Image 1 (cartoon, rainbow, N blue to C red):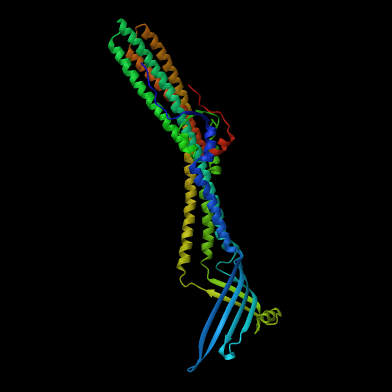
Image 2 (cartoon, rainbow, N blue to C red):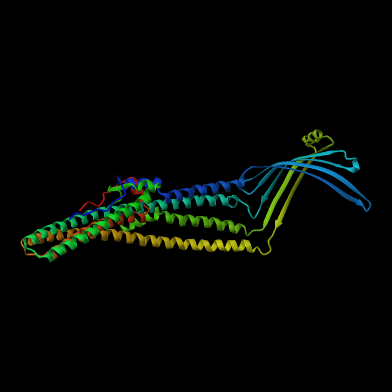
Length: 480
């Protein structure tokens, strides 16, 4: 009886190893592409924070007219042009320096609106002495942005580890689907051969139609299994394609032919070694620890904001005055009309609830993050222990399922001999063939599960990308 296979859309075969798939995912995976931008965004935020210490240039110009009463029946009219330029810059200590030049032109009706030009050149500074004093406080935004860059880089690394594991899982599932399909096709061939033999026996009268019906029914059942296995290949291919390309439509016409290469180490390390690896390499743990750094920094800043505002300020410069603008400027350059100021400004919030509340919040968040670190470390230990246990169990499953498959093969071969001699029935032989086919599928599944367990073990240690890049170790999977 003929059998029509499932019509694949794919027309081009593309052999890919696991290393190929991981390499493609590093370049084309869309989730990675999204996550790759986050550290760059954080670097842009750091650049923005550095703007607090930029040199600033300012220009101001204004014109005003006013009538100022000098008595109930008289007033003074004045016209004034004011122009100023300046440079200001803040340094990490908190000090703000300034250079200022003012140039004013005024005239009043009392002097018949004759212009007077006044000029000032000078320097000034403001230094916080309590609140906002010190480089650690004034660099808070930059240092916080630096830590955020580290956090985003660790999150990106975590996404890489997840992607490598997801690619490995999808690759192994596709490999399983293809090997399982081959197993089911062989099972179908057994049933079709038995169907043909039974048909011949029925025609010569040495077998009943019931045996032929049983064979026909089994062929139809195994045809359905082949169809479903072919569809599963397509599904698993699409899962893998979504992980390794950003041009999914272009890959719809391609059929991936997986070829297993050496990527992950086969033998699991000791629990102690695996746990040390995880504590050293796990990027999600690094994220929490960097967040702890950030909260410590925030707490230090918030404590400083509890202080009163006490600022020391001063300026020093030279004045000039003349009815001619050029003469006024020259008068300033003679440096004989100096002006200086020194002063303190104190501002004490009587309740200060905003600063106190922010500081208390930072203290509680610091306590939270310490608990989160301990919680994460314990979770990692559990994940590592489970991953090692899963590898050891799957290794035993591979051995057990191989024995079962070998025994099943021997049983089927013996039963076929009995059937040829008329000492067995169609029903018995079909049942044993199905048992053997299921044993082969279980062996393939055990091998695939072991590969996936090894990939997961490397992920929980934070080693997925390391081993993928080094491309070392020997795989446990081979064709049955």
